[in-house]
Length: 545
Image 1: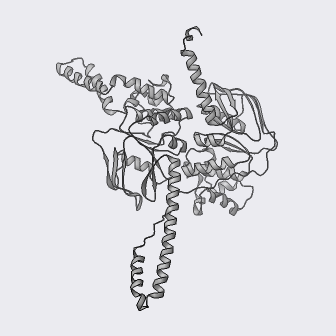
Image 2: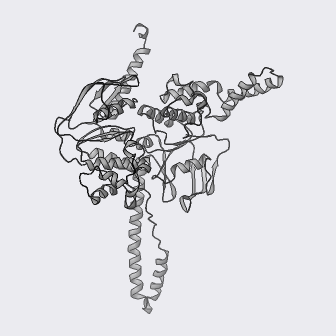
Image 3: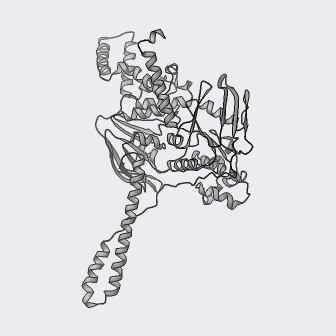
């Protein structure tokens, strides 16, 4: 169990949260939610001891081991992948290294033998002999190939390092597990594995995530940071949405009734205060009036952008034809003779772990890359708007947000452009920010503004939910559902993919799998196929096949 007592954290004069007393109990997974800047990551850092609170304290039950997902991708560069994961249980790792040092001594003494025996006993009690196997199982579950397990961390690309650090946090069955955006940079297969791991985890979990499907799948409770407080709700994210809205509705209704009561009391007092026969009743009502307190309705820190893609023209039947596209990147053939056609009602989600293949295809379809062979053709009625995964070049400029968006606007009118930016929460002086200093979330909102202002009837989006908060993801999700044109996209957000797509494509080993189905149906069919394949290989006749 982990709890806080009168916890306060201030940044300057601003309190992110104040006088928070809260208890997180064993056997529950808590989803920590709140607007960007509300203090979610800060709260986790305080719980893990990385930050000191302004006031109050964190209390952890005796002998409880706490583990957290680290964000420094370079901290373990000198260690192997397996050693890094095992470091998730520091005491176990220290015993391993101490044993190795003793056994390596050229002058092994009786004292060394006694110490080694003590260490061996503690090592066995901690299931140390299974440590490498357990670490390898975690890594494989997250999609880290066995060939990577003995490499140095410095040899790995950042996406793989993220998975290793996550495996480190999960290793050794910690009593308290703190995860800050654990699904970031994970492919959908790795996310699905993590969901199952956390569902079966029997200790305490506190996780920050913008993935609504993930929170619905793994959470038994929600801890909401808002109004400078942290409020606990039983249930998953969807239940929190219903409960919090109901609570606000009830508070408003209670206040309405109290305001009516206040009005009646004031009218009675005004009419009869000077009337001797009614003076006692007037005095009684004055006392009753003084006792009535309205519920404080503080403004929420949450802000919802308004996202709405409106095509300037309807799309025809002829949308996109792709014939025999091939492309090799750094010696790897990521697209191998790909062919397909897109119809006017298609909402196509590209899924699967091969992110390079998806991004390469999108870049070819938008003219950023040329294929090695093959061709594609857009219909004459189509206009395309593109959301790139890497937008570095887009914002390599000293332009203000207003000037940046103005260059893409069909109407060179400041009021018109400000309208789009206002919808995306760039109000007032925010539009005068230089685009080269924007945060990741601000850049995404700029790109979505650009797509809205284009009036295109085909949207191509490569991981648009990265860097967005929950409110912005919900707004984008709803906009994609409403959009009457064609959508071609990839997203790590399960709910966005499931609610938007009516067609699923996956590129495996350069080849295309194409199904007219929803994402959940695709996953169920794919899982069934894998189980069937496994059964065939392990059945009685496997040796004859």
